[in-house]
Amino acid sequence: MTGETRETIVARPSAFNQALGIRLVDWVLDRATVELDVTGDHLNRSGVVHGGVLMTLLDVACGYAGTWTEATDGARLCVTLDLMTSFVAPALAGRLTTVATVSGGGRKIFFARAEVRDEAGKLLAMGQGSFRYR
Amino acid sequence: MTGETRETIVARPSAFNQALGIRLVDWVLDRATVELDVTGDHLNRSGVVHGGVLMTLLDVACGYAGTWTEATDGARLCVTLDLMTSFVAPALAGRLTTVATVSGGGRKIFFARAEVRDEAGKLLAMGQGSFRYR
Amino acid sequence: MTGETRETIVARPSAFNQALGIRLVDWVLDRATVELDVTGDHLNRSGVVHGGVLMTLLDVACGYAGTWTEATDGARLCVTLDLMTSFVAPALAGRLTTVATVSGGGRKIFFARAEVRDEAGKLLAMGQGSFRYR
Amino acid sequence: MTGETRETIVARPSAFNQALGIRLVDWVLDRATVELDVTGDHLNRSGVVHGGVLMTLLDVACGYAGTWTEATDGARLCVTLDLMTSFVAPALAGRLTTVATVSGGGRKIFFARAEVRDEAGKLLAMGQGSFRYR
Image (cartoon, rainbow over all chains, first blue to last red; front, side):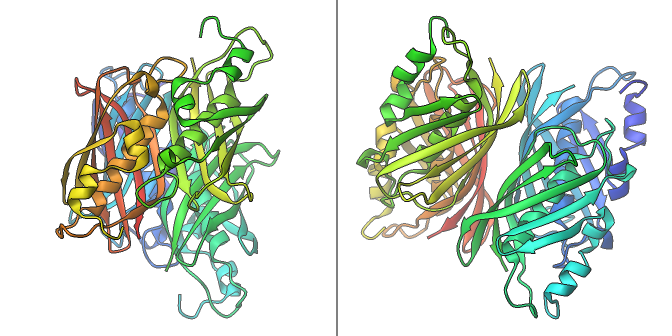
């Protein structure tokens, strides 16, 4: 997006990421890590973290993983084409850490995978998808 | 969940659904419709509705579609096993309507599909997944 | 592919489609129907149709649905980016009919969905995915 | 399936696996490797390995990964609930090796991921899904 730099991207998450409390904590070529501290607003009717939160974490982390660029004075953007999430275990509380890696692709499209884990390292959700550069 | 009835489920969405502004507006056997009015908090860095919002709508609608029961004094609960979302077109503003239908399954697991459309009826995202009754 | 026309595409399926016995039986803009008659070679260890057969039917039907062109003297080709299949019920025997429809997309990418049904019309598998034109 | 042992499972693939030439070459708790040597019958209209072949490899490998048991005189069976495949790069020729690992789950359902790679180790397709024990 015009005017954004790597620094502003890290410092100012998108409105929805801010609303959820998602932070970009590590970002290198083809890999990104985002975090979120669970609050009551993230819960579903069963008292565990809503699937929508986990899917958002996977999507956000994958998007960052594919759009890192060496240039610090510009930013790439992407749109998600497809994302599939498997809900391996319920997320209860604490800090959720999501690591995404780019699996392949080219100049126009990339494929990525990501995992959400809790503080004990337990796998909560995993995702896989394709993304198109804008 | 103990103590919930069909009325309380409709009247009191989960914390995350409330935080996002998701409303259950139609609910019958094997089909549910949920709505959300887009606000600035739903947007991503590109200025369109964040994929996490659309995935949440699909997940919520599918979950409702599979858990309607004739009994008004109890409630079924389910967990999502997998959900795949395809982002067909960007969502810009206004009211997003998501209709989910159950495609099949049995006593323990059900399969469902859902679509998010804008006020003009344009397809924005479609989802497909499997869900397990609790 | 150079030299192919709509007629040769219908008359001469790809090697793998031929090996499996998949036939293109209906093809119009944004929709295609393919058929397969179950034989012993299609079965898995449990004695029902192998998931690989159902996924292939979904993929093939979606690919055709997105590549129909008005021109009869040329052919479009596509590659699948992602395909998600949900196995709703076991496929036992007889003729399997798969109908795919294009849900959206543009000049470079399209999204499609498809369903495999048995002779009684029972839903066996459903798929959703994205495809890139070549 | 009644009467099957670990040895017969390895020695006698299912009819469809045999038809495609899929071999189980490594099998331990929560991990399985299957191989296939590409022939002309595996190709699609574009002259590369048909997506159906790659999806079948992913499905087969995941199924094995989740059904290994310590007991050598019996066999577990599973059905696939959902499988999502991302087609990262075209598969051209030679031996395709697919490794699947179980990511989590419990007594009734398991989640698994798998990758198809060519002889040079290049990633061709990746899959993720859920499976139910029978």
